Each structure stands twice: as C-alpha cells, then as structure tokens.
Length: 338
Image (tube, rainbow, N blue to C red; front, side, top):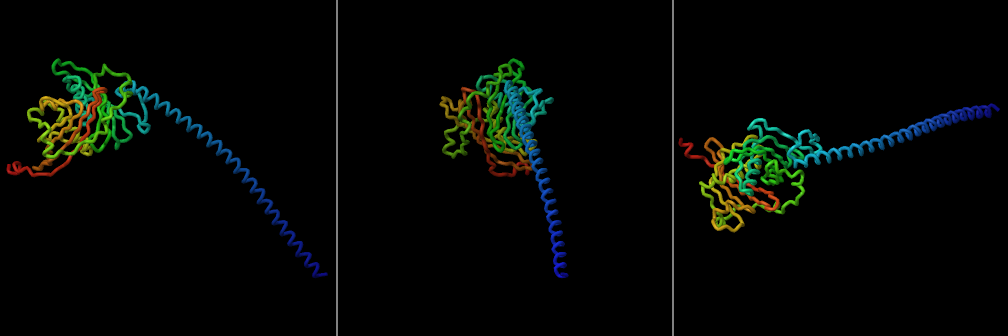
C-alpha cells in the first residue's frame, strides 16, 4: 500500500509538472500568436508606407521631369544664351551663368572661343568684326571633368565703321583632354533663331581624324605660310592658342605670349589657282605648326601642333580638332652667353 501510495504521489507530481509545462507552452503559443499578429500589422503598415513612398517618389520624379522640361524649353527659346531667372540644380544638369563685369573677368578659354566664333562668322560672311568685350557666358556640363558647352554673349566692333553690336557664339567640346570643339552658333544677337538652331541635322565631319605629321616629301605639296602672312591670318595664332589651352587645362594661367610660331604649313583639298589661296579654304583645311614654348631660365621646348578645320557650308557649323607633340627641350645659348 505504501509503495502504491508513493507511486501515486509521484504520478501526481509528474502530472502537475506536465500541466505546468502545458500551461507554459500555451502561454508561449499565445505570445507567439500575439507577436505574429503584431508582425502582420507592421507588415501591412510597411506595405502601405512603401506604397506611399513609391507614390511620392513617382510624383517627385514627374515634377522633376516637368521642371526639367520647362527649364530646357525656356533655355532653348534663346538657344541657351539668356537664362536669367531660370534655376535648375547642377546635379540635374542645369546650366551655370557667369557675368563678366571687367574685361579680364572671363577665363582665357572663353575669350578664345569668342574670338574663334567671330573668326568663323567673318570667314563665311566676309566681314571683319573684332571682339570688344564679353558680357556674359553660360556653361553646360555633366561635371567639371567632362566636356562642356559654352554660350557666350559679347560685343563685336566693326573697325571700319566703329559700330558696336551684341553678338552670340556657342562652342561645344567633345573631348576634355585634347582639342575637339564645334562652333554651332556665331551670329549677331538680333538674328536669333528662337530655339531652332539646334534642331537641324548635325554635319557628318565631326569624326574625321586628325592626320599625322607629314613626311618631307608630302610637305612639298603644302603651302608654306610666309611670316608676313601670319599677321593677316591671325586665325592661325588663335587655333594654336586654343590647342595649347585645351590640352593644358591644368595650367591655371597659361602664358600664351611664351609661344612663338616657327613655321606653318597649310593643306586643303580645295582646288585653288594661287598657292596662298589655301589660307582662305573654307571646307577642309589642315594646319601644321612648328612652335617654341619659352620655359624660362634659357630653356625652350620645341613643339608641333596639327589642327584640322572643317566647315559645313549648309549649316555654318565649324569643327576644330587637333593634337600636339613635345619634341625636345633646348638651352638658349644666346641667353646664357648674355
């Protein structure tokens, strides 16, 4: 009896223990169900929040697209030259506007683009407009390390009459490390096209490669420019300065006065009666320039530059491409002797 009684007692304790464990499991299951319910509610809330964020994102994207479309619609009404009052963040591709309050406010590169734009106009229109001052310019670029477009508003003067007129030039770089630029607009401001200039088909000459330096035999068929002709054809110097500046962008203030032209040869595919008429060739011309760069302290760097010019007479677009080579550095003995 006592043994049975002891067994019964143990069974009761075991049963009690099992009931306690069952109760604990039941509590755990209830807690799990509560947590599960909470997670389901949170999941629903997160889903609603995600849908709301997605809707807000789409709305913001649509608003941004509308802003960008309206911005560029207003920009291209003036062909990119007048963007006063228009604001679009640079990370969205907005243009940057600069005002030149003083004659030397503008960078050398902008000044060269302005002069070459006038040169293109003079060449095609048989005019003689000269740069008087740069009033403002706008730039368009993805970032500082990428090629940029420049929309320049300047004042041009006619030396014969002294008349001054506002003028517009646009230049468009295709390469940042070398000279490869297009000049699409070069016109008096009053002849603006109201947003139509960039809708025409681009000429097909932009991908024409720059030739190598010719051999001595090939040089015989080129026209050797006389020293007296360099002043009359100052565009040769402009091309050289632009080629030097565009390939030496890390130099903050390049001294273009240190460049001395030694020899110039011009080649063009146009048929002309007089050899020197090649200097007036419109469509396709290649200029081969030997020049010296004064490095100071009696050192001179011998350089060569090759520049190809192509002009589309239908649209008036002009392309300039070029590259240069540094040959050697020499010591100026005459300066050392002095």
